[in-house]
Image (tube, rainbow, N blue to C red):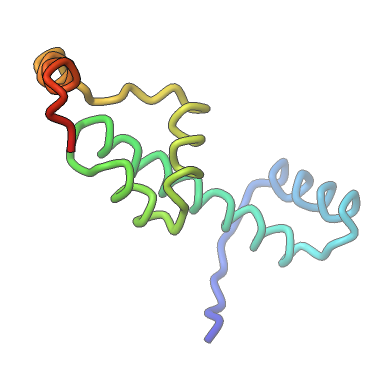
Amino acid sequence: MPVTLSTRVDDELAETIDEVARAEGMDRSTVLRRFLSEAARDWCIESALADYEDGRVTLWGAAERCGLSLWEMAAEAREREVHVPYTRDEFERDLGALRSGDIA
């Protein structure tokens, strides 16, 4: 069930919202819902990718948390230039596995 929220914004932001509403042929409420939805999505992705970068979650876990596919989250990570938490020791272990043919 929808919930009504109310907030105060400064005049400049109200003018921007009205400008977007006119340009897009929408009312203020629709513009605000769109802005809030996009901001919440962006926050979720930023937060999940920070946890991924710090090694607290896998990329798959970050994707699930945000309701994205693994490929969508990988694209977000690439676009946002997220550092992949892959250590030299992990690389050397994987390289050794490749050389020995011991790959799962």
